[in-house]
Length: 314
Image (tube, rainbow, N blue to C red; front, side, top):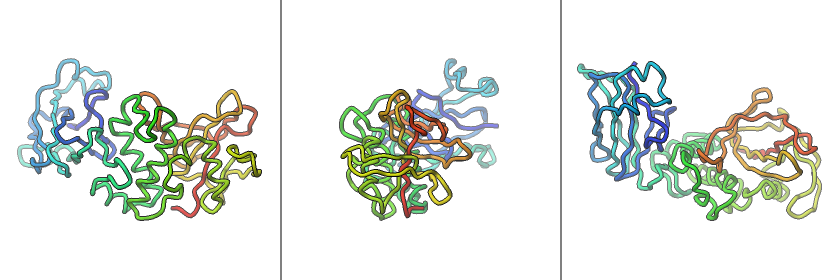
């Protein structure tokens, strides 16, 4: 059946296929491909927000390896969607009798060049802010993370300074950004406070918990505060009373020594021993969802992964 899709690397930043949503920077253009449906009429509801023009897909586009064999056998039209003014509108692809034959595509036009709906805790589109307010705080954290993942920053390599301000270790700053934006949209305090330094390394995240036992607990960590050498914590394992939940922070040890290497966000709660995280600073693409195993050991420790479980947050 006729449908819309994008091709990776061909102006696809800002496209969220799971929501049938395209974020387009004002005064910029994104390509969306209409597969099949040669008799469909394409239009946009509010042309003061976005416009659409079209051309036939090129030979290389029609044979792109991301298309399946059926798609490659169809006629494909390239829809060039241009952002005009910030706001939200809808693209339709309709039959001659006026019926939608493709799920309508929501188009969000933004003023930044990265196709992000959230650029700072106070810099959120009204539409995304309303969406976040309807979610739980944990769900809102993940929704912000997905917005960043689908943006130009998330789809391309590099851009290391966008969350932290210098050229290293923005994985933890990305996690703090998602919590900050979500908390601000919902009008509640960020459990991690206003300084992203607390998540800029696993050691700093552990240190944060040592000083904030009312806000978070560490799961699968035993030892001293790595930043001060003070205190000692007994291991608390994952249980029904102490679960790993979406939005919690996951800390990764190095494979070959007793050091640390990464900070990410729990994307899906564990099912058995498997779960998923959403991670920044991943190369190309820079933000992506990663499959992980709970029980992997590392460097003589019982577990490679340690979790910061945020308390009192649904």
